[in-house]
Length: 78
Picture 1: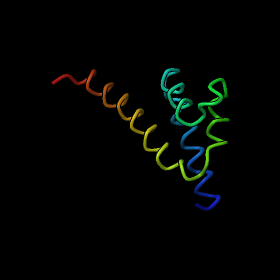
Picture 2: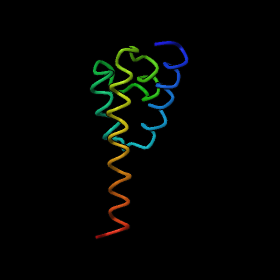
Picture 3: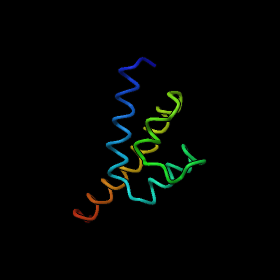
Picture 4: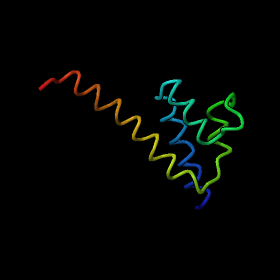
C-alpha cells in the first residue's frame, strides 16, 4: 500500500472511531492493541500494521453505519 493510501486509511479510521462509543473504541483496542489497552485511540491507529488497515476500516465503518441506520429508523418508523 502506498503512503497516500496508508494516510487516507488511518485518517478515515480516526474520523470514524471518533464517532464510536467508548466501548466500541475499547473493543477496537482489544483487537489492534491488546497489549496496551490504555493507549490513545489515535496512537493505536498510527501504530497499526498497514496490512490490517483495510479490514479495520470495514469493521469501523459497519459500526458507524449501524448507528446511522438506527437513527434513521428511529426518526422514520414504518
